[in-house]
Amino acid sequence: RGHNPGGRQAEGCSVGIGICSPCLLSRFSNTGERSVGGMEFLRTVLEQYRIIEQRRKFFRSHGYRLDLDNPMTYNEKIMWRKIFDRNPLFPKLSDKLCARSYVLEKLGQTEGEAILVPLLFATQDPAEIPFEDLPEEYIVKPNHGSGWSIIVDRERQVPRERIISQCRKWLKRTYGQKKMEWAYSGIKPCIMVEKLLKDNRGRLAPDFKFYVFNGTTGMVYVLYDRFGSPTEAFYDRGFKRLRVNTSFPDGPEIREPENFGKMIEISEKLASELDFLRVDLYDVDGRIFFGEFTLYPASGMYRYAPLGFERKLGEHWPLNREYSRDFRPWF
Image (cartoon, rainbow, N blue to C red; front, side, top):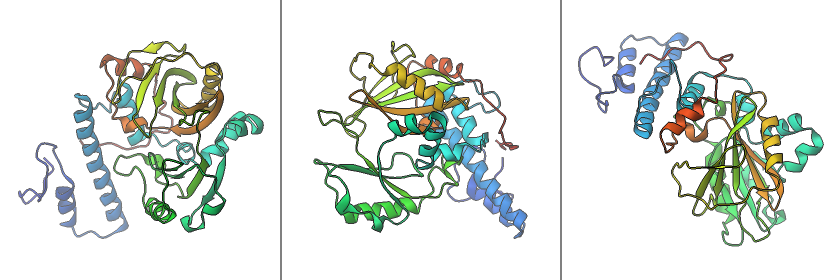
């Protein structure tokens, strides 16, 4: 079933998935083709292999097989988006630097600037970061990845040589290739230094993540202490607590923030052009800040409990196939 034609399974081949990268590459190399078309075929082979890997990971995460022909659950639709959706807006939203200009476009200069985290510096050469001129507390991150950051504050003093070294490693990487998160592939990498957001008690601001489906918020995910001991809570659009869990312990019961309605309004404006977008905001002592846009939350691998919640969440999301590419998985 797709193994090399000589009948020998390639070394390292995984039995049971139907096909493997070494076998496909072996089969192709026997043809002797070295044309541009041949290289294109190689890229196709690699992409098909990655789809197989994604199917395996999906099954391990969720306990059911991924249906790309008729995706119904929320995570199936994330996977469909990763593999098929080539909306030209996606790279701009995934680029943390370009996303700032998109916020200004959607909200206007005055309202947009009011929610942007102060950008202290941006560069393609980490050695240019003016450490002497930075405040005592800040955060360093690349514009082309997710989950990559260095916090510098009173408790976390990081030598500048280590920051520069890590930034150079980030700049050499293309985020999301193995996970098939296409939107990151064309971003021109750079390093950003932003103000570190803390409340008046010196705590990092909680994340309010708004899951917006066709312009309407379907769920709000609140993540506390994301760089320490994370806890989480889920709410509906009316700030009613939802008894849902993923990988973190339950967070505390909190009152509805006074600016929650405004956060809803901002999120829905920012996400108005897409069938689904997660808009991440911060609430810092009553002031709203924009965090980032997320097109592929957890790359489609978050397991929600109870199990029926994921299907219910998927019902909020009628897929927009306008930018679906002409592509057919082999397996």
